[in-house]
Image 1 (tube, rainbow, N blue to C red):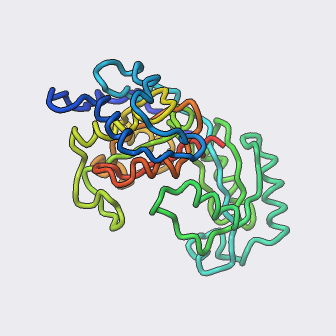
Image 2 (cartoon, one colour):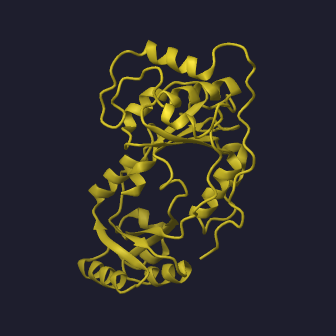
Image 3 (cartoon, rainbow, N blue to C red):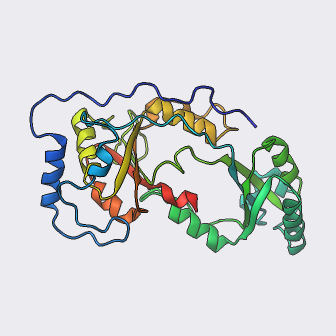
Length: 306
């Protein structure tokens, strides 16, 4: 298992200076709140937005109106395991472990489960049907980025303790009926924030991306996003992560990946991370930030802590 980044603190974050022209952020937030008088009635963020909401979080980054940089840590050393089973379809041709046979049999599943339960690095082991996998992927996908769910395999899931994950992978791959194994460290932000609001990166090639062809947001656009964050109820803290820190979090979680295109920070966004006193309602948060210039997507981070 590879070590965490030696110095996982973010470089100094720039948020843009206050020009002194136009209303202050709190005034713009109040004006926006007054303009949206329709009650927002979803649990978690179901209080009508009004001037002054979010003040509980403002003191954390002071009178400058600047969000906090990412905290120094901790960097989780625990993780999650997904063991996908052979399906006996053409899709299996890409997995060498499935080429010799068809779909995983009932006997294979018994051996896999027994093998997993005998491994001291694993806990909370459970079988997941295709239907459960589909539901989980849909829940964790942001709007407009749902994965192809046509040929989803059966799987075993587990929590993983710190240890030699490379050796663990090899032991699991040797079990009959196993197609492929994924081991990821827990995300840096999972225990630090409830929602993430990603801004447009420098470059984007996805045809459905609202950021395609436009580049990173201006300082005014970023401040407008912050104004709406400040108007949310029950804000405890607001962080702004730059692309360099985002890259560190990717390398931490995807610890085996090398040479990825994600190493190009031009394709990585700045992201606001918000911690709230109550769990958010993702659909309502998405509506609040939907269509804002400079916003790429909104992520409900709280679902990853379940």
